[in-house]
Image (tube, rainbow, N blue to C red; front, side, top):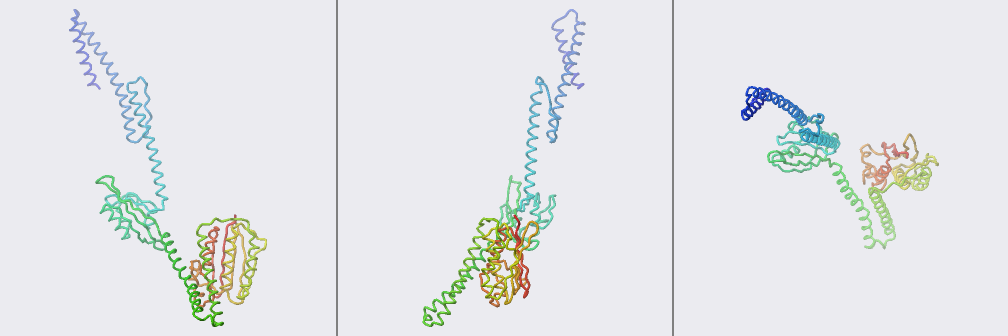
Length: 447
């Protein structure tokens, strides 16, 4: 500042002396005194202007530095007549735009973080140095390992050989890799669709985005569909083969033997009924899976139970089974009448078929809080613990029915019951013991 003022004084003084010399004043001493006095005044004025300009520049410089440090300094307010007004205005506008961009970025970052946290797909970002830059909670669940937020080699987290090899291939070959792998789970292995996506932002910088998607249920459904087709084909083949075989035998000459023809016709009739029952059950399963709507209405449960007991009384009499109805006749609940009727018929039919002579079946209901339950307990042959885990599977029949040939059926009865109960937002529970009997409890919500 002093150097600039000295320079200004010398320049203005020299200019004033030159002016005096050009004027050629007769009073040279007085003229020189006036010239230097004016030079000093001019220097003071220049010093004030320099100081004023430095203050403005300092304010604007601090403002820009604050913006660069992502701080939030106050706007610079200057008079419209100030020569720095337009510059200050543009800097203020720049800060406003920066704040807007920062808010947008903060919102996007928060949305991205929330999305990653709740995304059911495992996500991991690995840089070119094979270090983890990002991983979400789903990836931790897949790997069953806590992932450090600090950058570290991905091999510290990925300990499954096939998965690590896939990621290494994407990094070394710089190409996207895709494979379906088996990863160990808490209770059972999981089938996982793995994609290691290679992305390059420049020639020297690239990343690999690892995505893990659990397809265990998809594969399970596909397997169930294949099993269903296989089992259905097998079950259909048995009665069709019997009908075809005995029909050909009759055509070959057995029709001329009255005793044999009657016997074969009875077998054909029985197998035809079995075929019709199987087809109806398969159609029922298909109808349930198509997602047909629930038509909930006030249903006289007590009267429906009494009606089913009356309809099944002849079958129970043939099997020497006693039906005990403890459901109040005036009981009314909100449910789907058609579905509930089918549930009741299937469970009661099973209880009769798998009962023993002189056995009994007791039908009762309970109600507590926001739910009510239908309980059907029999004194039949019972189901072994290992079979209880599978009785709700399609086409599955307990060993007791296969080995002793006590009953015939499609093996779809309880599978249909479970599908129907779940479609009504209910739950089904089965408790059984060999030679003691079985209790089926179906719980439904109270609307």
